[in-house]
Length: 321
Image 1 (cartoon, one colour):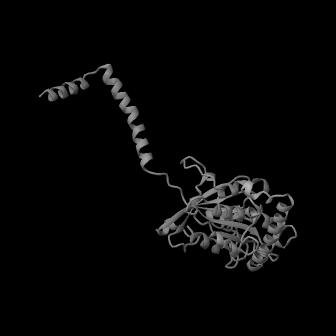
Image 2 (spheres, helix red, strand yellow; image 1 turned 135 degrees about the horizontal axis):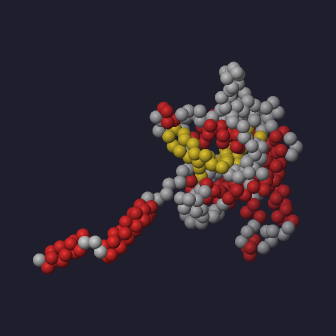
Image 3 (cartoon, one colour; image 1 turned 90 degrees about the horizontal axis):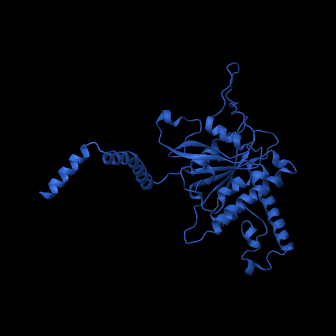
C-alpha cells in the first residue's frame, strides 16, 4: 500500500502546475529527440555507395563521358533530322578544375544501357557513384588520393573525396587515342598511367595483415576512335606497354644514379618500390599486374561522333558494381 500511495502522490504532483513540473517537462521535450537521434544513428551504420573513379590526362574526355552517362546524348534540334548512323552529341563540357561525382544506376545483372530509364521500366537497379577527377598535372593528386592507403573519413557529411577505398569498385583511365600518335602524347599519357598503376600496386602489396584490400580492376578507355587519326585499341595497348617499360627503366636508372637502394636495409625502401609489374623483367605487359590482383583491360570507344560509342565502357562498369 505504501508503494501505491507514493505512486499516487507522485502522479497527483505531476498534474499540479509547479516550477518543477515545467522544468522536467521542458527538459524531456528538448532532450528526448536528441537522445532518440543519437540511438538511431549509432545503431544504423552510414551506407556508402560503391564508386568508380574516372582518371586520365586533361582533354581526354572524362567529363564528357561523365555527362553522357548522367544525362544521355543531347537530342538534336527540331530543325535537324537525326540519322540512324549519326548518334546525338553529348552535352557540351569544359575542362574540370575540381572533382565531381554523380549518382548513377545500372540494372542488377549489369546488362542495361546508360540510355535506359530504369525507374520507368521498374527494373531492379544498383546505384553507384561515378567520380570525375581533373587531369591537369598539378591536380592529379586529387585522383591519386583515392588510391592512397590512408584511412578515409566515415562521417556521413564527408565529401566524395573521402570515399572509403573498400567501396571503390573500378578505375577507368580515359585517354585520347588520337593524341597517342603525337610525339608528346604517348609519353605524357603513359607517365600518368604509370603513377596510377604504381599507386594501385603499392596499395595491394603494402597492405598489413592477412586480409588483402579489395581488388580494383582498371579499364583503359581509348576514347575518340571516331577520329581518323585515332589508334585502334590493340595498338593503344601495345604502345602503352612499350612506353611503360621505357618509363620503368628510366626511373630505375634515376634511382640508381641518385644512390637510392644502397641503404635499403636502413631506409626500409628500395628500388623495387617504384618498379611497376614483375620486378627485374625486361619488358612490361599489363598481364604482370595480375600478380597484384590488378586486372587491366583496354577497350576502344567514343563519346561523340560515329565511332563505337560508350556502351562497352558502361557494360564494363555495370559488371563490376
